[in-house]
Amino acid sequence: MDITILEPIAEKVLDKIRRQSRNPIDRAKLAKDLKISEDELNAGLDILKSWGYSMKINPGGQVVYESAPDRLITPEITNKLKTKIIGHEVHAYKTVQSTNTVAHQLAASGAPEGTLVVAESQTKGRGRLGRMWHSPENCGIYFSLILRPKIHPTRAPGISLISAIAVAETIAGCNDFKIGIKWPNDVLLSGRKVAGILTELSAELDRVNFIVVGIGINVNHKRADFPAELKETATSIRIDGKTKIKRVDFLQKLLYNFEKEYIIFKKSGLEKSRKKILKYSSLLYTDVDLRMGRKTISGKVIDIDKLGQLVIETSEGIMRFNAGEVTTR
Ligand code: BTN
Image (cartoon, rainbow, N blue to C red; front, side, top):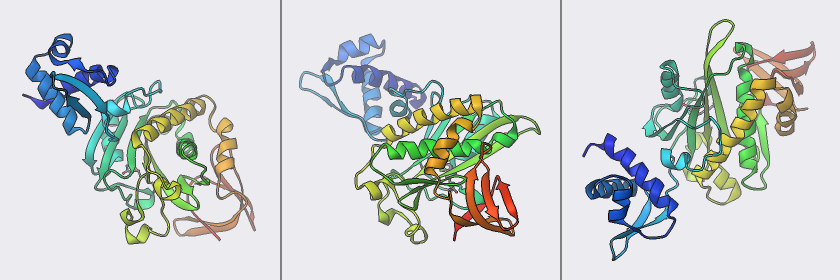
């Protein structure tokens, strides 16, 4: 049987048996209720098992639903998702080169606002400034969102900051963690990088066509999952919190937190989010070097303004920056 026909059948079966919780359901009745043949039902159940769902067939031939896998697959991500638009269209992959690249292609061909592209691993995960994002299978969460805000392109960097707030708040909700946001788009856990954000823009001079915001989070990585060059600077929620995280739950909370910040941002820019940005900022009142291309500016960070710019007090006066690579001194 054709897999493109069977997958929707599997999702229908899942929807039904999940609602029965652990109560046994008669197979013939299940097939009849879903208006499918028993062969289709069996094929659907096999697909669900291959996706990692656990269920058993009891001696009377009834189906008993047991548990769901912690896999980033569409029926799990959308099950009881509390958002209004974010993550309602999902493109979930086992592996891709980069979810940002896939999201860019989907956006260019008209995918709606809120579309989520997620993968269990990336072979060419992209970071800022041409870096790679290490994306091993089953450890992290790697995803991109397609956004179509009606804003001026100069306000687009604000998307990185509200994404960082959403990530920081979701991680903070897992444990008693020490979270920081390192402007413009790194999230730190106990001073080490736990998440990164890559915001890419397609725009005309005066309007945004679409934005792809890509977020990578080190969730269940163990120390050994990081390559040598990241061992000192990176961490994961599991390493710091000493417990494994349910990635599907985490992603659903993150999408919810993101949507909350995004709605506020679309309405009133960064003004209302500034308090949170400053609360989490790891750079506020610290001495930094900010590198932009070949130029380096040194001074003390005194603010992040309502345009999301880093405000630095330098020997030549107060300066504002909307991009750059910051190191603390
Ligand atoms: C950075 O810290 O430099 C940004 C890292 C962004 C990584 C995420 S993972 C999901 C999405 N797809 C990519 O290729 N990159 C972003």
